[in-house]
Image (cartoon, rainbow over all chains, first blue to last red; front, side, top):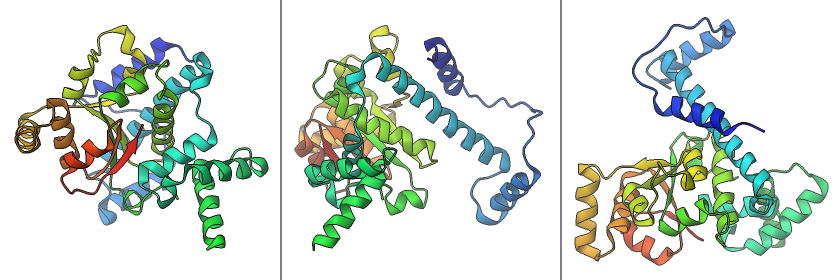
Length: 137
Length: 145
């Protein structure tokens, strides 16, 4: 289990990201670097490859630290861990998915999907539920 | 599925917490805790897939529920990187104007200002009807806890 101090330190560093920069000896595949340069100049995905890289790294770190916090929380409070149905309902609600108003259908779909695909995602469940609705129409 | 078309185009979604959503997420004993955690887990999973989504709280909401980030009792929700939306001059003006029109609480007025300033908004709330008043016609997703 990840230590709280590690989580707090990562969060502190993410929060204190100031204007100062540093040259690193980080090695990345040259093709990836070239693709990033092209995306910056031609697709305007970011002002520079440095900004693009820093933004992607920040998002990845934020997601990782937040997941670590949730994983610790699930260990301590197992009843707080959402089921696949909970997550599918939440995913539908966040987006205003048309099936968000039918949590029972989503729950049934989650149970069906999980029988065949134990690692199914909430999005898989919503797709299954939507397919069932379309087939029934 | 699970990602609106605007999110596929890179438009950021913000998930805003109202007073009760903050309490529900922060307190494992709250009856809606698992529900609030579910929405947080979906946001985190999307973030890990590079979908632009953030969870945020207007600072006036934090004041209303007594969320002092320096207190250890708020450690869990602090560590989840729920961002503060400060009551800066622009938000203060929008919130004051909204409060004049609707007589909502200061916390809700700040929430309304945050709704107005965001691209794509989902609000986690115990009072969906109030959120629609705050949105003043703007399209938002409201999740009743």
